[in-house]
Length: 295
Ligand SMILES: *[C@@H]1O[C@H](CO)[C@@H](O)[C@H](O)[C@H]1NC(C)=O
Image (cartoon, rainbow, N blue to C red; front, side, top):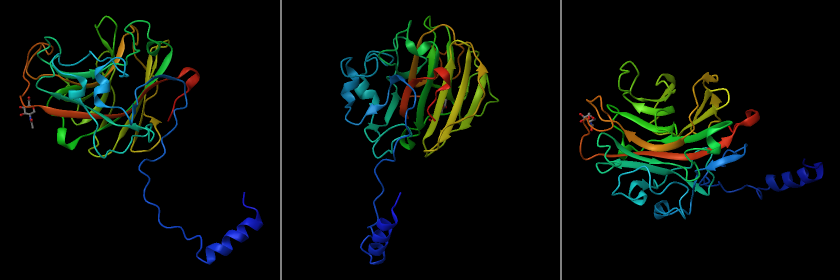
């Protein structure tokens, strides 16, 4: 509260032009939205992080060995996009991260896929705290105009895979979903365990798109939250039934499926000369027990 005395004092200066502040330059980062709930895994990238930090378990937040082309290091796969503003939940001490794929992005003998996916170092395949209770996965995505995805293909960008690798509890995808030609290709899609569409939204060419997925591992439901730019998230679905059983791990990056095959893991068509990327920011998992969620 201003006291009348102080106000009068300030006004007397203002009218004399003494307080006419010079126009302020835009701050380099807007204030980040607060993470309100206990953090389970924080995958936000510290501004001081070097690309080579991702190559070693002593310096990476993620598994340095998986899931990527055997001959590639993470420092060759990842990029720090220049001049990108921070996403909604990134502070000025965080920066965006781009995951790329090329012709060498072949994991083991999975010649059908081009893939590079990060797994939280602490996200054990069984017994992970992120696969029980009620947890919300947050992530923001942005497009790199120089490394566009080819939406003729089906992409998995983020998912949670069961510990026995027999299913994904959910997929965050884009492009042409194989076997579902009615779904538009230029949307981000959240698909449930049975590969049915739960929600989709068009891909923004320029803005950040912010998603949160609340997984209730007790009640077997999934709820989606979304916003664009720096807007607060809002729910875009109710909690929908989804079989979240089977534990496993979260993964984010790019998995590009081939075209023209029923055996997507091992065969099919991938063009050569691929140089594609997906920019991520604000990745974290929070505890949503008691309905807590950061918006
Ligand atoms: C996109 O992928 C299809 C199928 O692999 C391919 O025929 C086409 O040339 C690609 N388009 C571009 C622009 O790379």
